[in-house]
Length: 206
Image (tube, rainbow, N blue to C red):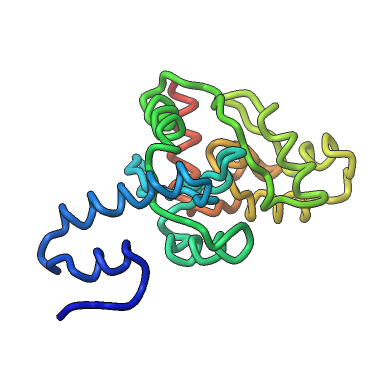
């Protein structure tokens, strides 16, 4: 069936055979490249496979804006980005090449800090103050929620630190997995308890 409405790109998409995923992938790449060149791509995203599962990476022109675990529901995360950042969002892996490469180096034990431009548009107020403290926790080390609260200037805000870690838009890159309970137990983590234990074990081994 021939489609006569919509943009040229939409008509081209509609004309592709449903059984030709390679052609569809090539077209999506072309659309993403064209959107990037035209300044119409506000949020680019890709997924990467890691030892803690599939991670969604998303970046604006300012920098990495979101890292999400599979258990956080990647489709829901994309919908949230479209609502809170911009609806002009496309799978465009090239913008995230550096982030993907640095994650590979981290999981291989060759990187202890991330060196990426970050967009903290999704972090506000005290939560942003907490996130600013987390990169100061050395690789292979941990700090308690209470110590982080004190470092952020609000010693009594232990529960708020827990909330800031749980809603960290950039886990791994901003290392909230290094924040533990005062008794030394791991505490909660957006990626799940198993992911947190694995990250701490990875860093301890290195």
